[in-house]
Image (cartoon, chains in turn purple, brown):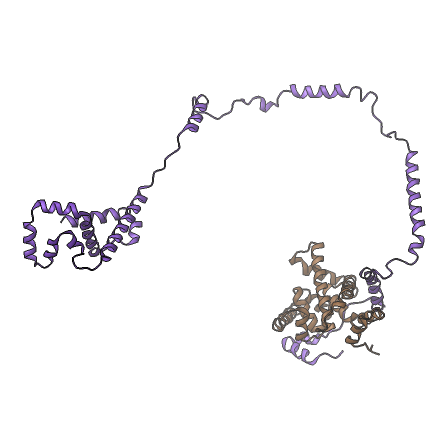
Length: 277
Length: 184
Protein backbone atom coordinates (compact mmCIF):
# COMPACT_ATOMS: atom_id res chain seq x y z
CA UNK A 1 0.00 0.00 0.00
CA UNK A 2 1.33 3.41 -0.92
CA UNK A 3 1.59 5.63 2.10
CA UNK A 4 0.68 9.27 2.08
CA UNK A 5 3.96 11.11 1.55
CA UNK A 6 3.08 14.09 3.70
CA UNK A 7 1.95 11.93 6.62
CA UNK A 8 5.01 9.71 6.31
CA UNK A 9 7.27 12.75 6.34
CA UNK A 10 5.57 14.05 9.47
CA UNK A 11 6.02 10.66 11.15
CA UNK A 12 9.63 10.48 10.03
CA UNK A 13 10.33 13.75 11.76
CA UNK A 14 8.57 12.63 14.93
CA UNK A 15 9.87 9.08 15.06
CA UNK A 16 11.92 7.38 12.33
CA UNK A 17 11.45 4.11 14.23
CA UNK A 18 7.68 4.24 13.88
CA UNK A 19 7.91 5.35 10.27
CA UNK A 20 9.92 2.23 9.50
CA UNK A 21 7.37 -0.18 10.94
CA UNK A 22 4.70 0.14 8.29
CA UNK A 23 0.98 -0.32 8.54
CA UNK A 24 0.63 -4.04 7.91
CA UNK A 25 -2.43 -5.53 9.51
CA UNK A 26 -1.80 -8.13 12.19
CA UNK A 27 -5.41 -8.99 13.06
CA UNK A 28 -7.26 -11.90 11.52
CA UNK A 29 -10.82 -11.77 10.26
CA UNK A 30 -13.04 -14.83 9.66
CA UNK A 31 -13.23 -15.89 6.02
CA UNK A 32 -15.99 -14.20 4.07
CA UNK A 33 -16.77 -11.85 6.96
CA UNK A 34 -16.98 -8.72 4.86
CA UNK A 35 -19.44 -10.38 2.48
CA UNK A 36 -21.78 -11.14 5.36
CA UNK A 37 -21.93 -7.68 6.95
CA UNK A 38 -24.43 -6.06 4.60
CA UNK A 39 -27.03 -8.90 4.71
CA UNK A 40 -26.64 -9.19 8.51
CA UNK A 41 -27.15 -5.47 9.07
CA UNK A 42 -30.10 -5.38 6.68
CA UNK A 43 -31.67 -8.28 8.55
CA UNK A 44 -31.37 -6.19 11.70
CA UNK A 45 -32.68 -2.95 10.23
CA UNK A 46 -35.62 -4.25 8.26
CA UNK A 47 -37.84 -4.74 11.34
CA UNK A 48 -36.93 -1.15 12.20
CA UNK A 49 -38.23 -0.13 8.81
CA UNK A 50 -41.52 -1.86 9.63
CA UNK A 51 -41.88 -0.01 12.91
CA UNK A 52 -41.14 3.31 11.22
CA UNK A 53 -43.71 2.67 8.51
CA UNK A 54 -46.99 1.25 9.89
CA UNK A 55 -48.35 0.79 6.40
CA UNK A 56 -45.63 -1.69 5.44
CA UNK A 57 -45.89 -5.45 6.03
CA UNK A 58 -44.82 -5.68 9.68
CA UNK A 59 -46.01 -9.29 10.30
CA UNK A 60 -44.64 -12.56 8.90
CA UNK A 61 -46.30 -13.92 5.81
CA UNK A 62 -49.49 -15.93 6.60
CA UNK A 63 -49.56 -14.67 10.20
CA UNK A 64 -53.26 -13.80 10.18
CA UNK A 65 -54.27 -17.05 8.45
CA UNK A 66 -53.00 -19.12 11.34
CA UNK A 67 -53.80 -16.63 14.14
CA UNK A 68 -57.24 -18.05 15.06
CA UNK A 69 -56.09 -21.65 15.15
CA UNK A 70 -53.02 -20.68 17.19
CA UNK A 71 -55.17 -18.87 19.78
CA UNK A 72 -57.56 -21.84 19.98
CA UNK A 73 -54.64 -24.22 20.44
CA UNK A 74 -53.30 -22.02 23.23
CA UNK A 75 -56.70 -21.91 25.01
CA UNK A 76 -57.03 -25.70 24.74
CA UNK A 77 -53.57 -26.12 26.18
CA UNK A 78 -54.51 -23.95 29.20
CA UNK A 79 -57.73 -25.90 29.71
CA UNK A 80 -55.84 -29.18 29.63
CA UNK A 81 -53.42 -27.89 32.24
CA UNK A 82 -56.32 -26.77 34.50
CA UNK A 83 -58.04 -30.14 34.10
CA UNK A 84 -54.84 -31.94 34.96
CA UNK A 85 -54.44 -29.77 38.10
CA UNK A 86 -58.01 -30.58 39.22
CA UNK A 87 -57.19 -34.27 39.29
CA UNK A 88 -54.23 -33.78 41.58
CA UNK A 89 -54.99 -34.50 45.26
CA UNK A 90 -54.72 -31.49 47.62
CA UNK A 91 -53.28 -33.68 50.34
CA UNK A 92 -49.84 -32.44 51.41
CA UNK A 93 -47.04 -34.89 50.88
CA UNK A 94 -45.30 -33.77 54.15
CA UNK A 95 -45.73 -35.65 57.46
CA UNK A 96 -46.26 -34.29 61.01
CA UNK A 97 -45.59 -36.29 64.23
CA UNK A 98 -48.76 -37.90 65.64
CA UNK A 99 -50.66 -35.55 68.05
CA UNK A 100 -48.40 -32.55 67.15
CA UNK A 101 -51.25 -30.04 66.80
CA UNK A 102 -53.07 -31.34 69.98
CA UNK A 103 -50.17 -30.50 72.26
CA UNK A 104 -48.96 -27.39 70.34
CA UNK A 105 -50.84 -24.72 72.41
CA UNK A 106 -49.83 -26.06 75.81
CA UNK A 107 -46.27 -26.49 74.61
CA UNK A 108 -46.01 -22.85 73.47
CA UNK A 109 -47.58 -21.61 76.76
CA UNK A 110 -45.16 -23.68 78.79
CA UNK A 111 -42.18 -22.20 76.97
CA UNK A 112 -43.48 -18.64 77.33
CA UNK A 113 -43.89 -19.06 81.11
CA UNK A 114 -40.47 -20.60 81.37
CA UNK A 115 -38.99 -17.54 79.65
CA UNK A 116 -40.75 -15.14 82.04
CA UNK A 117 -39.60 -16.90 85.22
CA UNK A 118 -36.13 -17.68 83.97
CA UNK A 119 -33.42 -16.20 86.19
CA UNK A 120 -31.21 -13.46 84.80
CA UNK A 121 -27.83 -14.48 83.43
CA UNK A 122 -25.22 -14.64 86.20
CA UNK A 123 -23.29 -11.45 85.37
CA UNK A 124 -26.52 -9.40 85.43
CA UNK A 125 -27.72 -10.96 88.69
CA UNK A 126 -24.83 -9.42 90.59
CA UNK A 127 -25.35 -5.90 89.30
CA UNK A 128 -27.23 -3.43 91.53
CA UNK A 129 -30.41 -2.20 89.83
CA UNK A 130 -30.07 1.30 91.22
CA UNK A 131 -28.85 3.84 88.69
CA UNK A 132 -25.47 5.35 89.53
CA UNK A 133 -26.61 8.91 88.79
CA UNK A 134 -27.35 11.48 91.53
CA UNK A 135 -30.13 14.07 91.77
CA UNK A 136 -29.93 17.21 93.95
CA UNK A 137 -31.73 16.77 97.30
CA UNK A 138 -35.43 17.64 97.07
CA UNK A 139 -35.27 17.98 93.29
CA UNK A 140 -38.44 16.01 92.65
CA UNK A 141 -40.47 17.72 95.42
CA UNK A 142 -39.59 21.14 94.08
CA UNK A 143 -39.88 20.29 90.44
CA UNK A 144 -43.61 21.04 90.11
CA UNK A 145 -43.35 24.39 91.95
CA UNK A 146 -40.27 25.58 90.10
CA UNK A 147 -41.82 24.69 86.76
CA UNK A 148 -45.05 26.52 87.59
CA UNK A 149 -43.02 29.46 88.88
CA UNK A 150 -41.24 29.71 85.54
CA UNK A 151 -44.53 29.58 83.69
CA UNK A 152 -46.04 32.40 85.80
CA UNK A 153 -42.94 34.60 85.67
CA UNK A 154 -43.69 38.05 84.18
CA UNK A 155 -42.15 38.88 80.89
CA UNK A 156 -38.60 40.06 81.12
CA UNK A 157 -37.97 43.68 80.37
CA UNK A 158 -34.80 44.02 78.42
CA UNK A 159 -33.19 47.36 79.04
CA UNK A 160 -31.41 49.22 76.30
CA UNK A 161 -27.64 48.85 76.59
CA UNK A 162 -25.76 51.87 77.95
CA UNK A 163 -23.68 52.06 74.80
CA UNK A 164 -26.75 52.55 72.61
CA UNK A 165 -27.97 55.33 74.95
CA UNK A 166 -24.68 57.12 74.39
CA UNK A 167 -24.95 56.87 70.65
CA UNK A 168 -28.55 58.07 70.81
CA UNK A 169 -27.47 61.05 72.93
CA UNK A 170 -24.70 61.81 70.46
CA UNK A 171 -27.19 61.70 67.62
CA UNK A 172 -29.59 64.01 69.45
CA UNK A 173 -26.84 66.52 70.23
CA UNK A 174 -25.56 66.44 66.66
CA UNK A 175 -29.10 66.95 65.40
CA UNK A 176 -29.65 69.85 67.78
CA UNK A 177 -26.37 71.47 66.71
CA UNK A 178 -27.25 71.05 63.07
CA UNK A 179 -30.69 72.55 63.70
CA UNK A 180 -29.14 75.50 65.56
CA UNK A 181 -26.64 76.16 62.81
CA UNK A 182 -29.42 75.92 60.25
CA UNK A 183 -31.60 78.33 62.22
CA UNK A 184 -28.81 80.87 62.62
CA UNK A 185 -27.62 80.77 59.04
CA UNK A 186 -31.14 80.92 57.62
CA UNK A 187 -32.14 84.08 59.51
CA UNK A 188 -33.18 86.84 57.06
CA UNK A 189 -30.53 89.51 56.78
CA UNK A 190 -32.86 92.37 57.67
CA UNK A 191 -31.55 95.24 59.75
CA UNK A 192 -32.48 94.83 63.37
CA UNK A 193 -33.62 91.22 62.81
CA UNK A 194 -30.41 89.41 63.87
CA UNK A 195 -30.42 87.18 66.94
CA UNK A 196 -28.34 89.57 68.94
CA UNK A 197 -30.38 92.65 68.11
CA UNK A 198 -33.70 90.99 68.72
CA UNK A 199 -32.43 89.72 72.07
CA UNK A 200 -30.93 92.85 73.40
CA UNK A 201 -30.04 96.10 71.66
CA UNK A 202 -27.05 96.49 73.99
CA UNK A 203 -25.32 93.57 72.21
CA UNK A 204 -25.60 95.39 68.91
CA UNK A 205 -24.24 98.38 70.65
CA UNK A 206 -21.42 96.26 72.08
CA UNK A 207 -20.37 95.14 68.59
CA UNK A 208 -19.20 98.65 67.84
CA UNK A 209 -17.22 98.92 71.05
CA UNK A 210 -13.56 98.13 71.39
CA UNK A 211 -12.49 95.39 73.82
CA UNK A 212 -11.80 97.67 76.72
CA UNK A 213 -15.06 99.64 76.43
CA UNK A 214 -16.94 96.29 75.93
CA UNK A 215 -15.40 94.83 79.12
CA UNK A 216 -16.32 97.94 81.05
CA UNK A 217 -19.86 97.83 79.76
CA UNK A 218 -20.15 94.15 80.74
CA UNK A 219 -18.79 94.87 84.16
CA UNK A 220 -21.30 97.65 84.62
CA UNK A 221 -24.22 95.42 83.79
CA UNK A 222 -26.36 94.77 86.83
CA UNK A 223 -26.93 91.21 87.96
CA UNK A 224 -30.65 91.70 87.48
CA UNK A 225 -30.27 92.66 83.80
CA UNK A 226 -28.03 89.60 83.19
CA UNK A 227 -30.58 87.28 84.84
CA UNK A 228 -33.42 88.89 82.88
CA UNK A 229 -31.44 88.55 79.66
CA UNK A 230 -30.62 84.87 80.23
CA UNK A 231 -34.19 84.07 81.26
CA UNK A 232 -35.53 85.69 78.11
CA UNK A 233 -33.01 84.40 75.58
CA UNK A 234 -30.93 81.75 77.40
CA UNK A 235 -31.66 78.86 75.04
CA UNK A 236 -30.75 80.59 71.86
CA UNK A 237 -27.69 82.24 73.34
CA UNK A 238 -26.44 78.95 74.75
CA UNK A 239 -26.96 77.34 71.40
CA UNK A 240 -25.11 80.13 69.63
CA UNK A 241 -22.28 79.85 72.14
CA UNK A 242 -22.17 76.08 71.75
CA UNK A 243 -22.18 76.38 67.99
CA UNK A 244 -19.32 78.82 67.95
CA UNK A 245 -17.49 76.62 70.42
CA UNK A 246 -17.98 73.58 68.22
CA UNK A 247 -16.79 75.40 65.15
CA UNK A 248 -13.57 76.16 66.94
CA UNK A 249 -13.15 72.68 68.38
CA UNK A 250 -12.40 69.57 66.45
CA UNK A 251 -15.16 67.04 66.89
CA UNK A 252 -13.98 63.47 67.58
CA UNK A 253 -13.69 61.30 64.53
CA UNK A 254 -16.55 58.87 63.88
CA UNK A 255 -14.33 55.86 64.54
CA UNK A 256 -13.47 57.19 67.97
CA UNK A 257 -17.03 56.49 69.15
CA UNK A 258 -16.62 52.85 68.22
CA UNK A 259 -13.15 52.49 69.64
CA UNK A 260 -13.89 54.07 73.00
CA UNK A 261 -17.23 54.21 74.76
CA UNK A 262 -16.11 57.22 76.75
CA UNK A 263 -15.35 59.41 73.72
CA UNK A 264 -18.60 61.34 73.95
CA UNK A 265 -18.36 61.74 77.72
CA UNK A 266 -14.80 63.01 77.44
CA UNK A 267 -15.69 65.40 74.66
CA UNK A 268 -18.65 66.85 76.57
CA UNK A 269 -16.55 67.17 79.72
CA UNK A 270 -13.85 69.04 77.78
CA UNK A 271 -16.48 71.29 76.26
CA UNK A 272 -17.95 72.05 79.66
CA UNK A 273 -14.52 72.84 81.08
CA UNK A 274 -13.78 75.21 78.24
CA UNK A 275 -17.06 77.00 78.74
CA UNK A 276 -16.56 77.44 82.42
CA UNK A 277 -13.00 78.75 82.05
CA UNK B 1 -9.44 -5.90 -9.28
CA UNK B 2 -10.44 -3.02 -7.06
CA UNK B 3 -14.15 -2.51 -6.42
CA UNK B 4 -15.56 0.56 -8.06
CA UNK B 5 -18.02 2.08 -5.64
CA UNK B 6 -20.70 4.56 -6.61
CA UNK B 7 -20.34 8.16 -5.60
CA UNK B 8 -21.68 9.10 -2.12
CA UNK B 9 -24.09 11.67 -3.53
CA UNK B 10 -25.54 9.11 -5.88
CA UNK B 11 -25.90 6.60 -3.04
CA UNK B 12 -27.65 9.15 -0.82
CA UNK B 13 -30.02 10.02 -3.61
CA UNK B 14 -30.86 6.36 -4.13
CA UNK B 15 -31.37 5.90 -0.39
CA UNK B 16 -34.14 8.50 -0.49
CA UNK B 17 -35.97 6.47 -3.07
CA UNK B 18 -37.97 3.71 -1.24
CA UNK B 19 -37.54 1.34 -4.16
CA UNK B 20 -33.75 1.67 -4.10
CA UNK B 21 -33.26 2.23 -0.37
CA UNK B 22 -32.01 -1.27 0.55
CA UNK B 23 -29.75 -1.50 -2.45
CA UNK B 24 -28.23 1.89 -1.74
CA UNK B 25 -27.68 1.00 1.89
CA UNK B 26 -26.02 -2.28 0.93
CA UNK B 27 -23.72 -0.32 -1.37
CA UNK B 28 -22.84 2.13 1.42
CA UNK B 29 -21.98 -0.78 3.73
CA UNK B 30 -19.85 -2.46 1.10
CA UNK B 31 -18.05 0.78 0.32
CA UNK B 32 -17.06 1.63 3.87
CA UNK B 33 -17.26 -1.62 5.83
CA UNK B 34 -13.57 -2.51 5.77
CA UNK B 35 -12.26 0.93 6.65
CA UNK B 36 -14.76 1.26 9.48
CA UNK B 37 -14.22 -2.29 10.66
CA UNK B 38 -10.48 -1.78 11.03
CA UNK B 39 -10.98 1.56 12.70
CA UNK B 40 -13.22 -0.16 15.24
CA UNK B 41 -11.13 -3.30 15.53
CA UNK B 42 -7.97 -1.40 16.43
CA UNK B 43 -9.91 0.21 19.26
CA UNK B 44 -11.81 -2.78 20.69
CA UNK B 45 -9.25 -5.46 19.63
CA UNK B 46 -11.54 -8.52 19.56
CA UNK B 47 -13.33 -9.45 16.34
CA UNK B 48 -16.64 -10.27 18.08
CA UNK B 49 -16.69 -6.88 19.76
CA UNK B 50 -15.71 -5.11 16.56
CA UNK B 51 -18.49 -6.95 14.73
CA UNK B 52 -21.07 -5.90 17.35
CA UNK B 53 -19.94 -2.30 17.27
CA UNK B 54 -19.91 -2.23 13.47
CA UNK B 55 -23.41 -3.67 13.18
CA UNK B 56 -24.81 -1.30 15.84
CA UNK B 57 -23.14 1.54 14.05
CA UNK B 58 -24.72 0.64 10.69
CA UNK B 59 -28.13 0.22 12.33
CA UNK B 60 -27.77 3.78 13.62
CA UNK B 61 -26.74 4.90 10.15
CA UNK B 62 -29.89 3.32 8.68
CA UNK B 63 -32.08 5.14 11.21
CA UNK B 64 -30.30 8.46 10.84
CA UNK B 65 -29.46 8.58 7.16
CA UNK B 66 -32.80 10.18 6.26
CA UNK B 67 -31.86 13.15 8.43
CA UNK B 68 -28.24 13.31 7.28
CA UNK B 69 -27.39 16.81 6.15
CA UNK B 70 -25.24 16.71 3.09
CA UNK B 71 -23.24 19.73 4.16
CA UNK B 72 -20.76 17.25 5.66
CA UNK B 73 -19.20 14.27 3.93
CA UNK B 74 -20.82 10.87 4.38
CA UNK B 75 -17.38 9.38 5.04
CA UNK B 76 -16.76 11.82 7.91
CA UNK B 77 -20.23 11.24 9.34
CA UNK B 78 -19.75 7.46 9.28
CA UNK B 79 -16.40 7.75 11.03
CA UNK B 80 -17.95 9.95 13.68
CA UNK B 81 -20.68 7.43 14.41
CA UNK B 82 -18.16 4.57 14.45
CA UNK B 83 -15.91 6.51 16.84
CA UNK B 84 -18.77 7.31 19.20
CA UNK B 85 -19.90 3.70 19.15
CA UNK B 86 -16.34 2.56 19.97
CA UNK B 87 -16.10 4.93 22.92
CA UNK B 88 -19.54 3.90 24.19
CA UNK B 89 -18.60 0.23 23.88
CA UNK B 90 -15.31 0.71 25.74
CA UNK B 91 -17.09 2.65 28.47
CA UNK B 92 -19.69 -0.08 28.89
CA UNK B 93 -17.00 -2.74 28.87
CA UNK B 94 -15.17 -0.97 31.69
CA UNK B 95 -18.37 -0.84 33.73
CA UNK B 96 -19.30 -4.43 32.93
CA UNK B 97 -15.91 -5.82 33.86
CA UNK B 98 -15.41 -3.25 36.65
CA UNK B 99 -12.07 -2.25 35.14
CA UNK B 100 -10.37 0.63 36.86
CA UNK B 101 -8.33 3.16 34.90
CA UNK B 102 -5.05 1.59 36.01
CA UNK B 103 -6.16 -1.94 35.00
CA UNK B 104 -7.48 -0.85 31.62
CA UNK B 105 -4.27 -1.11 29.61
CA UNK B 106 -3.43 -4.44 31.28
CA UNK B 107 -6.80 -5.90 30.31
CA UNK B 108 -6.46 -4.67 26.71
CA UNK B 109 -2.90 -6.00 26.49
CA UNK B 110 -4.07 -9.41 27.70
CA UNK B 111 -6.86 -9.37 25.12
CA UNK B 112 -4.26 -8.63 22.46
CA UNK B 113 -2.00 -11.43 23.65
CA UNK B 114 -4.94 -13.83 23.36
CA UNK B 115 -5.31 -13.03 19.64
CA UNK B 116 -4.90 -15.92 17.24
CA UNK B 117 -1.64 -14.92 15.57
CA UNK B 118 -0.10 -12.97 18.41
CA UNK B 119 3.68 -12.95 18.28
CA UNK B 120 5.45 -10.88 20.93
CA UNK B 121 8.60 -10.73 18.78
CA UNK B 122 6.92 -9.11 15.81
CA UNK B 123 7.22 -5.35 15.76
CA UNK B 124 3.68 -4.96 14.41
CA UNK B 125 2.26 -6.71 17.49
CA UNK B 126 4.53 -4.67 19.72
CA UNK B 127 3.10 -1.59 18.10
CA UNK B 128 -0.41 -2.80 18.95
CA UNK B 129 0.66 -3.36 22.56
CA UNK B 130 2.22 0.09 22.66
CA UNK B 131 -1.02 1.61 21.39
CA UNK B 132 -2.89 0.11 24.32
CA UNK B 133 -0.83 2.31 26.64
CA UNK B 134 -2.43 5.40 25.13
CA UNK B 135 -5.57 7.04 26.47
CA UNK B 136 -8.61 6.25 24.30
CA UNK B 137 -8.85 9.63 22.58
CA UNK B 138 -5.12 9.69 21.84
CA UNK B 139 -5.36 6.16 20.47
CA UNK B 140 -8.18 7.29 18.20
CA UNK B 141 -6.08 10.17 16.87
CA UNK B 142 -3.09 7.88 16.30
CA UNK B 143 -5.25 5.30 14.48
CA UNK B 144 -6.85 7.85 12.22
CA UNK B 145 -3.54 9.46 11.29
CA UNK B 146 -1.21 6.46 11.20
CA UNK B 147 -3.46 3.80 9.70
CA UNK B 148 -6.27 5.71 7.97
CA UNK B 149 -3.96 8.56 6.93
CA UNK B 150 -6.70 11.03 7.60
CA UNK B 151 -5.91 14.74 7.10
CA UNK B 152 -6.15 16.79 10.31
CA UNK B 153 -8.89 18.93 8.83
CA UNK B 154 -11.10 15.86 8.28
CA UNK B 155 -10.10 14.35 11.63
CA UNK B 156 -11.16 17.59 13.25
CA UNK B 157 -14.68 17.09 11.91
CA UNK B 158 -14.77 13.43 13.00
CA UNK B 159 -13.52 14.02 16.52
CA UNK B 160 -14.95 17.55 16.91
CA UNK B 161 -11.56 18.79 18.08
CA UNK B 162 -9.36 21.60 16.82
CA UNK B 163 -6.57 20.75 14.37
CA UNK B 164 -3.97 22.15 16.75
CA UNK B 165 -5.11 19.90 19.55
CA UNK B 166 -5.10 16.90 17.20
CA UNK B 167 -1.52 17.63 16.05
CA UNK B 168 -0.38 17.89 19.64
CA UNK B 169 -2.24 14.70 20.53
CA UNK B 170 -0.67 12.80 17.61
CA UNK B 171 2.78 14.10 18.51
CA UNK B 172 2.39 12.90 22.13
CA UNK B 173 1.03 9.54 20.97
CA UNK B 174 3.98 8.94 18.63
CA UNK B 175 6.47 9.83 21.35
CA UNK B 176 4.81 7.53 23.88
CA UNK B 177 4.72 4.65 21.41
CA UNK B 178 8.35 5.17 20.44
CA UNK B 179 9.29 5.23 24.09
CA UNK B 180 7.40 1.96 24.68
CA UNK B 181 9.01 0.27 21.68
CA UNK B 182 12.50 1.29 22.76
CA UNK B 183 11.99 0.05 26.31
CA UNK B 184 10.15 -3.25 25.72
